[in-house]
Amino acid sequence: MKVTVFGIGYVGLVQAAVLAEVGHDVMCIDVDEAKVTNLKKGVIPIFEPGLAPLVKENYEAGRLTFTTDAEAGVAHGEIQFIAVGTPPDEDGSADLKYVTAVARTIAEHMTSYKVIIDKSTVPVGTADKVKSVVMETLARRQANLPFDVVSNPEFLKEGAAVSDCMKPERIIIGTDNNQVLDLMRELYGPFNRNHDRMVIMDIRSAELTKYAANCMLATKISFMNEMSNLAELLGADIEKVRQGIGSDSRIGYHFIYPGCGYGGSCFPKDVQALIRTAEHIGYQPVLLQAVEAVNAKQKHKLFSFIQRHFNGDLKGRTFALWGLSFKPNTDDMRESSSRVLMETLWEAGAKVQAFDPEAMEETQRIYGTRSDLALMGTKEAALQGADALIICTEWQNFRAPDFDLIKATLKHAAIFDGRNLYEPERMVQRGFTYYGIGRGASVNPVI
Ligand code: UDX
View 1 (cartoon, rainbow, N blue to C red):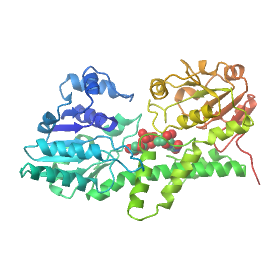
View 2 (cartoon, protein in one colour):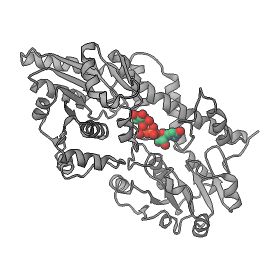
View 3 (cartoon, rainbow, N blue to C red):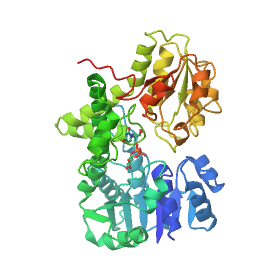
């Protein structure tokens, strides 16, 4: 099938590449000329395991093309994906200007039937807006052309985006015209094997499904973070509690890891956007507000341990920081807990020596060159001359470090572990003061 994808960001590029991989003829459009030129040379704008070879192979095979020519893009596919960004505006609502601009472009240039698919995470009611933008534009052109709008949200996780897209757990299709379903079945047939993964519903339910999924997951994490704070105050070990509750199949082991807060491009933005949507229609989303508040507080958790450990005396100290990205296997720094921590440490007059396997270039791009930030070539180099070690991201290569070397290099044998990578008892035996989330030296019962 001929498919056009507007927006070569995370979602658009991965979706385009996997559609090309199964044989569709995919044209990607972006306004960013440099991005398009780079992609043609095989330079991928993001770090995502498995994506670079997939893009290269399919580009070379001619099934995946990149251009800034929107008119050519509209002419190319009967299927037109909208996968552009929906950044939060000043009050945290999703800003739809890029989505409606693409809708207008499609309507300006189309000369035959089009299926317009909303792939971006968009607030409930966006498909209706897209529909009216297309209708207005067609009316202005005095063109009476048929089209359908489908809501088809994406559920890929960064770091596992290619496999999530190749083997989706569900394919949500929101439509008010069931005739479009044959086309959707043809498009997604190669991904819809063994059992039917397509869940068909009305457009608004599909739009809300995406937010409900992300908000549910964010809620699980904030819930566990709250439990971990209680565990500390009550002298319990959250790790044991996690295993205890996860064994209940109704709760499950996924997304119940407490930590130094969730980040990324989805959870913070989507929780906030749904809060705004609810408020706009006069509903107080008490639970979602709490999810957000717990997360904001949790991002300061490690700093409060550090302050306690050093009795508030942080000026002039240097901290080794392992892990900058918001989670492992990505270079994405959006809403990462490491940023809140670094910024708070800097305000307190401390320096940071950081190492991350993938996100150092991105960190450099965000913060530029500054005297209180040093990006180090290895995790061991980050320890040199540092007072203590802080861990913000659970990269695999941080799980079994040389503890003797850490102890010998740090000025104070203290580890502030935001991802509970180590066993508190073992760490104490090795001579460290160890702070975990809801465990270790952080456990300081008040009753
Ligand atoms: C998420 C959703 O998982 C995905 O389905 C959606 O389409 C986009 O948003 P992503 O942002 O890539 O994906 O990351 P995810 O793996 O979900 O992690 C989000 C954040 O939650 C990370 O900061 C991670 O460290 C944190 N997290 C996750 C926890 O703190 N505890 C957990 O148990 C799981």
